[in-house]
Image 1 (cartoon, rainbow, N blue to C red):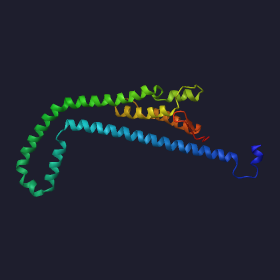
Image 2: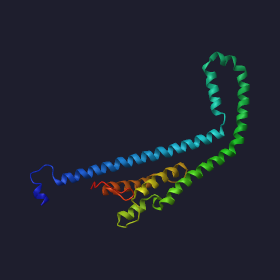
Image 3: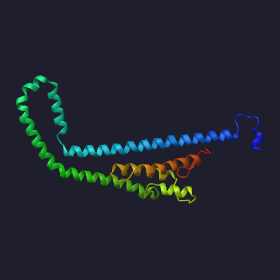
Image 4: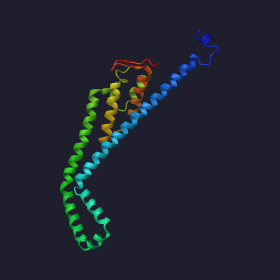
Length: 208
């Protein structure tokens, strides 16, 4: 009946269905790209802050020394007049800096270990909230595609715990990557958009 109703028409039911599929694929790609970019940005930001903090502990007078060196370099006359005394002052400053670095080395090491442990603990909390979000997620998605109905594998809660957990795991220096979890998160996004509903928020868009 659909075939006969579409005879002589350019905009048929099949073309409408194809357009919906292309829109669905485009939306999944865009949303997953945004999630991957946010995850990558947050993990790099946390890692950068972590290493900057440890570097400041290892070099407590680094910023002051750089500011003083820039101020002296701006004035050539002051540099010439100060050339005789600058060598002795630089030697004393370097010696004091070495002593400070040796005294703060142990504290910087324990601060680094504490930050690493804290980031890993935060990631483990999200795995405790949703155990399905642990691991790469690729075996779970393979089982789901082969007909095994794993509970909560494509829920929005699983997606949030997966993305946040991966962010803190990578920032914490754990031997994990973002490739497998991005496959799982992409499957959750595709399932949510194609089904058009979520049990977590009670929303039904009826896209498909």
